Every structure is written in structure tokens, then in C-alpha cells.
Length: 323
Image (cartoon, rainbow, N blue to C red; front, side, top):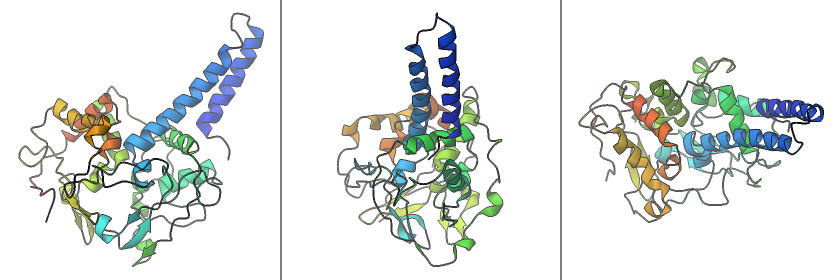
């Protein structure tokens, strides 16, 4: 598979650097490979960070251990796919399985080009032209900066190839009924990642990538209740436990209106220690992958908090673990 555009740019830049080395004795030959490696590693690291800690790629496309708090990813299963999304778990009319996104040539995306992966990520169309069910948040990735999408692709190519054929989906209605065509931009080339200097805008960008709104909005038979965006109430039935998403609007009584920035930060940062999630919580578990989200940087968590504080307050009292 060809190098992503960003990596190609890095390689071309470094080839130029190699030429300068040959012409300028003040630059040693040993410096050029370091520039090359550091540049590529920076792209892959950005992709790892987004895939693991923000966008939820590894969360949904791996095996999770719900005998531990928040269902941390089982080592060795990263990207192999197979997680089932059905009516109980995610309000899906039928059965949809997360795809294998490892670079396995037979059952994964090993033979996919960058453009084919971009199309799947942002338009919901797979290599063979199949339409992906929108439990895959391509509506949100459609708004991501291309450089971030290319970083994700670069990271996915570093995953261990896992031969794991995922079952076919079984929908109770044609996929055309669910494809959100009017909400998708035909091109992502003009998408811009906001500056870190504007925490509200950058926090909104992160919330979009993380798809916070979908999980924290009540689900009705007709779809999400858009009048209660971020007000919580989406119930997930994992089988051995049920949990309802929290109200994360700025409502003081039923949301996070009284939370300080530090309280919000501590909500996630505490799970940077494995001992704080490596236990069996029984029925008081959560589907929210806090063990992964905790890996977000403090500055990004603060930006997320800054954005959520701008969400209008909606009073919606939540019973976290319904009977």
C-alpha cells in the first residue's frame, strides 16, 4: 500500500535534506535519518493518540474485557474487529459487527489504498462499494482535518495483522434507510483543525471526533432525540449489566454545571493507573472506555471541558444503572 500523503511529504522533504547533507559539510550524514524517523514517528504517534484515546477506533474494533471496569481492550486484539452492535447495545435494527482494521491482507485492510480508507472513514463506503452502517461515526470523521485522518491511517498500518473474518451484518431494513448522505461533505480538503489557543473550538473538534454527542443523547425508535443533545439517557445493555449515559450539559443539578475543571480532569485522569480499573465492578460497570480516554492529554481534557461548558443546560436526571 502506498505511503499516505503526509508520509510521502516527509520522505520527499528528507530526500531534500539528504541532498543538502551532501553539499554542506556542516550537516553530518547521521543527522538526516533522525529527521526522517522523527517526522514519521510524529505522524504515527498523532494517529495512535487519536485512534486509541480520542476517536475510539481501537475501542470499537478490538475485544474488550467487561469483567473489568470500563471494558479495557484485551491485549493482542487491537483492531481485529468482531464487536457486536445490536438493538440492546446500541439501538441498531439488527446486527452489525465492527470490521477488522488491521493490515491483514485477507480479512483486514491490508490491500486498501489510502483513498479507499479515507472514503470509508469520511463517506462510509468500503473498498468493495458497500455502505457502512452509521454506528461507524463517519459523519463525524467527515469533519476532521485531513492531516489527522492521514495520521490515523499511518498508525493503523503499524498494527499487527490479525487474520479474523468478521461475521456479515444482518439488518432488519435496507442500509439505504440509514445512510446520512445529506450530512456528508463531498470533500474533506478544506477541513481545518482549530488552534489549541481556542480551547472551546478545539474542544468542540475533539468532542466531534470522540462522538460524545451520540452516546450522551437519548435514543428513540426514530433515532437520537436532538432536543436533548448531550443530556444523557442513552441506555446500553451489555448483557450482564445495563448502564445509561450521563447528562454532560451545563445543567447545575442534573449535568456537570457545578463541576470544576479539576473535577472534570480527575474524572478521567484517575484511570491512568491500571489499579483503578482492573477490578470486577459487577453490574456497576460502564461501556465508556475511560481507561482509554484517560490517555488524553490534560490540555485536551481541559479543552473538552471548556466546550461542554458552552452546551446549554438541559434538565435530565439520569439513573446510571437501571434495574
